[in-house]
Image (tube, rainbow, N blue to C red; front, side, top):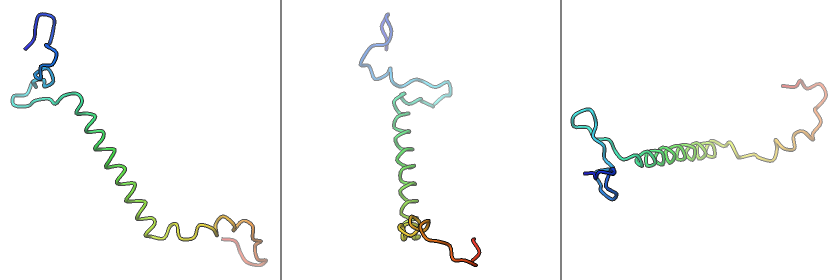
Length: 81
């Protein structure tokens, strides 16, 4: 439905565009935002899962020793690795 000046505002038929392929209908343009939100939630959930995996694996158990290790002298005769 349209008038001489273009599409009728507020008419829902303006949002859904027919596809060149029979039986296929394109979704409204704003559906891309929904897709991006779902993808960003999936990526955030993946990073959260990796964080919990690192905590469970003991990655953050000893957080003070590496920071002060530079202050200690190497023992003589002990090879550096």
